[in-house]
Image (cartoon, rainbow, N blue to C red; front, side, top):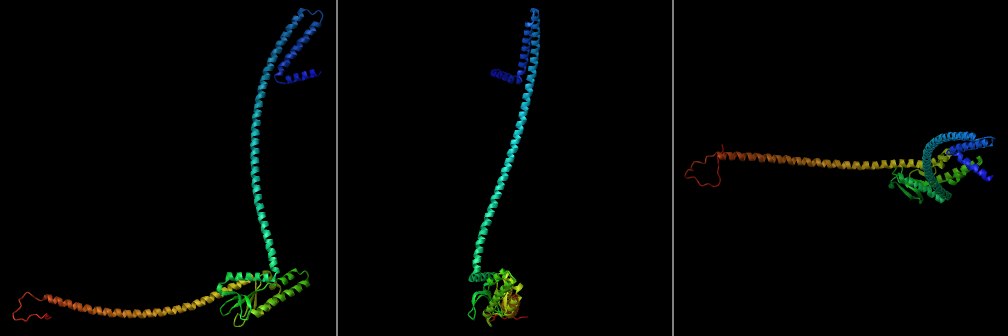
Length: 392
């Protein structure tokens, strides 16, 4: 059974092919002929006539089947050609589509790769920016820590305020207009002394920074704490004002006022916004409280005063030089007059010389008119070298 099923499977596979259709028709014709032969042989009395007619019919049927096989073979060949043509066309179309799809996929992958590369480059740049920002933040944190250390130390805080004040003075005034750490007549040392002409005279600047009381004021949570911190803040500022008025305002040596420099704009704004009585008491003591911004304006005014004083000095010098110039012009006028008189005398002398020359020329003409062709008479005295010619 296994061999028979294998044989039928092989036969079915061969018949399924396009070339197996003609074989199928031939097999059917052979089977039909065999069946007809068997039927004829089994009938009783079947003679040679029937056998011959059956053979003729079988031959006819075989011929027809052969024609049908040929027709089927031709149709099968045509169908095979069409199938091969369609297969080639389908293969070509598939190749074109696969090529186009491959090209599109390649272009898409290339664009994706380029975009990925650009994105990676942008990402690297942003990461570099983030790294730089993190470094800056770290540096700023270190600087803030250093600033916190400086502000927590009174001496360092005072040095910072003095440095800021010195930078402003150096930027806005000439070196001849100030002195740092100037010793006063009473032995005190001012942070800066502005050397201005009288009036107003020298002005002292002292840097102060009441940071502890200001921080306590800003950190106050309740009204009572704020009131107490405000009193302490005002007392600190007034103590600095009193010290500056007593130490740096000296009669006949400095101006009648001095400057207290606050290096923080926030402290200056808090003082003028909420403690006007402190500012008024400082005015009465002739201590002007300034911040970095107002100190710049004050120094610009000082520079204008110095410029005006310089212009006055230059005006005095110009007047002195103008007077000297006028004296020189007067002397030049006298000398020109003398020279004109000399030229006048010289002209008169030249005129007299010209008159003498004209007389000599006339006398020469007259001498040429005398007749020397006649013989000299006898008995005349010899010539003595002087010839007297009577003039007409």
